[in-house]
Length: 333
Image 1 (cartoon, rainbow, N blue to C red):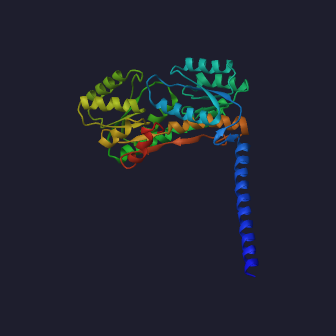
Image 2 (cartoon, rainbow, N blue to C red):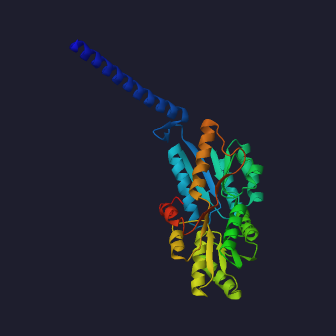
Image 3 (cartoon, helix red, strand yellow):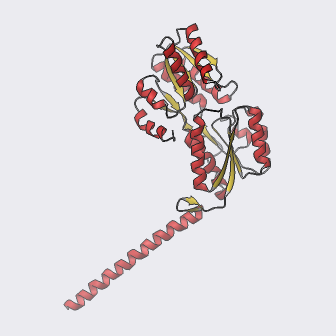
């Protein structure tokens, strides 16, 4: 009986081992099948290589666009996409870059729309040529008219209102909004939102965003002219740094806040030289723009249901800067 009991126990153990092995194989096979259905192999696309053109209105030296590009490159590496990045802050030149992408028969285009009248017609030409287009960062009110599949970015009017309300909560009395590129719809929307959210005394000036020393001197001159300005709000991180320098060279009392983020911003917030920043998560914009085209080409997926997919606004101040700052240092915020 003892021998029979041992044999029976061994049989049960063997059966359990077989079942466990079968389950492991089934789990592995299920995972491989799921990856195969999604066109992925070990987290990287096994689908045929496609070429996507990313065309922005970036000005030379603006580090904001480095973060967008890093997000795009990350998605491209995962999705087996050849990324062709180009940029020009001049609308006519940006339109020419889109036309060049059409002529080269790329598989998809990700584009910013800072000047819809100049850019929407050429986007429609791309779509007519059978090239899927997604918009990001600029053009939230125009991407639907262009026929773009999706939009990834911040609602800049809402972002501006968020900044204006925070300025009022902080006790500001006179706000100056600094625009680095005249005529770009997303920048104008930010300042309009600031004025709406703030509700107090408000001014706006235009500076040459392609010349940071000029930005600093223009802001400094404005503050000398009107010392009642107690908060400067810039629309990009490099211009916030220029404003800080202008204030240190002048009265030293006016405070600074900004839209957008780069690795230099967290130390400024920690030091108290910058009050807060409104982040729109550019890495996410770049990543989703490329990934959404891959999803559309391979699965027919479209994100957003015809509406914008928002990546901001997200306010960063002394309360959360330690957490967010480590990602900024890594180049993903």
